[in-house]
Amino acid sequence: MPRRPRSVPELAAAPFRGSAAVAAGLLTKADLRGPAWQRVFPDVHLAAGVELTHAVRLTAALVLFPRAVVAGRSAARVWGIDVDGPAGVPGDVEILLPLVIERSGRRRPARQQRVPGIRVGRGAVLVRDLVALPGHPGRLVLRPVAGALSLAAELPHVEAVVLLDQYCRPTAVARRLTDLEELRARAATLTGRGCRLVRAAVADADGKAESPQETRLRLLVHRGSLPRPVAQWRVLDHRGKEVARVDLAWPDLRLALEYDGEGHLTRLGPDRRRMNDLQAAGWRVLFVTAADLYDPVRLLARIAEALAERRRTVAALVEC
Image (cartoon, rainbow, N blue to C red; front, side, top):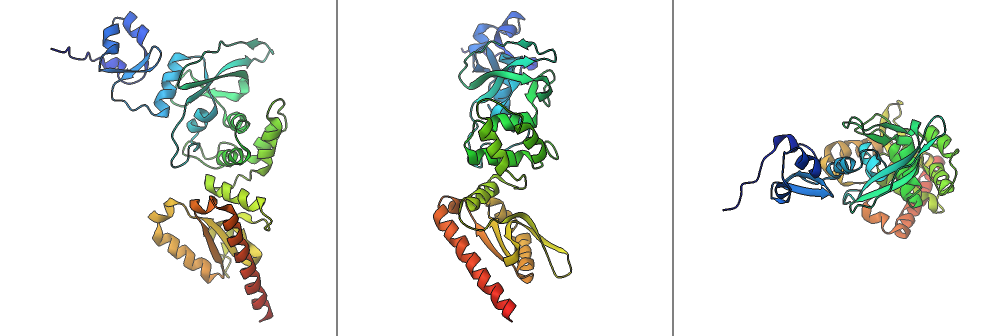
């Protein structure tokens, strides 16, 4: 008859060191190999049935590396930044074993290890760039501005700009994590590998996009030969009352460019009222979907055609 799995309530809530549980007499090595527990990383275990989300795996990684700093994409997730997209799959946990630069200038080295499922980096970290990890007393995470710039150095240009724009907008964690002024001031002081790429990304960020796709759309329009639109334009009616705020706009032509994501399907009523108000104010709205972004040549041609049509319309109204 198979042995009944041993239940240990004090170990069920969070990842723990298997060796420590065995040393304390809470479990045996046979228990750890049984069906009641799952191995997350070497010597780090968790109750069976707990979903191994990125947050759970991050907690487990910090059990294995208690002196590590949460960095990279893991730090972005801590601050409520979307680094996976709607269909993304969370990747490895990213932590940093820091060479902490203390106020005296002395450096404290950290030993680097390789563990499948954990991306372990190593580098110098200023004390001012560290802050307590929310919900994890004694653990550290890179501050938003430091985390944003260090991760931007690893990404392609467009995705780096997308990331920086997200850091400048409110999240579920904070009203605003940083702003363009702070990012630019800090980027100007960077030296070493990737510093020019980071400064180029900061230069192209505007901190106004309300979604990653809005940033990608704005950069696509900028790369074309089209006149540059204004981001997050407030459309006013004849009384000066705000009708709507549009993603991108050519105000002189009263043409708006809006990214139409999946969320629009859940708010058809308010969106239709908003569209009616925009039309009443004399605006035309051109919608862009995710599929359009995969065919940039065709999309830019559509936008150019819409711009030409609005020029003709505005010219006709002036003549009248």
